[in-house]
Length: 132
Image 1: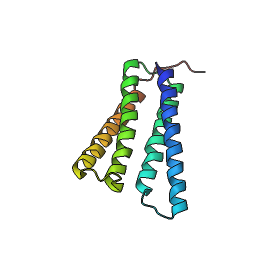
Image 2: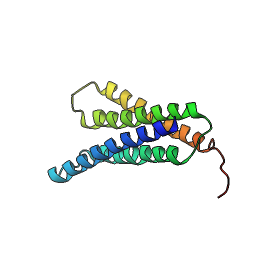
Image 3: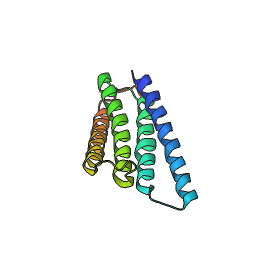
Image 4: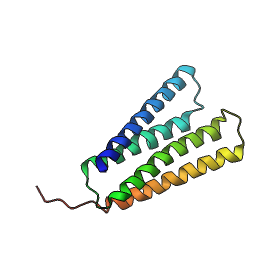
C-alpha cells in the first residue's frame, strides 16, 4: 500500500513541479508577476510537500496502512483544490462567480490543512525498527 502511495505522490509532485516551473518561466518571459502567489503555492504545496510525503512513505513504515490512503487522497485533492482555487480566485480566467471560486479555494485549502494534520498523525504511527 505504501509503495503505491509513495510513487503516486511523487508522480503528482513531479507534475506540480513541471507546472510550477513552466508558470515561473512564463512570468519571467512576459514580465508579469500576476501568477506569483499561485506559482509559489504550486511549488511549495504541490511540489515540495507532496514530494516529501511520497519520500516519507518510501522510507518509513506506518502501522495504520488505511490512513496512508486517506492521507494520500487528501494531499492530492487538497493541493489541486487549493492551487486551482487560488487561480480561479485571483486570476478569474473564466469570469465565473466569485462566490464559487472563493468556496473552491477555501474547500481546497481546508482539505489540504486536513492532509497536513493527518501527516502529523502519521509521523507518530511509524513502526519502530531495530538499531543498526
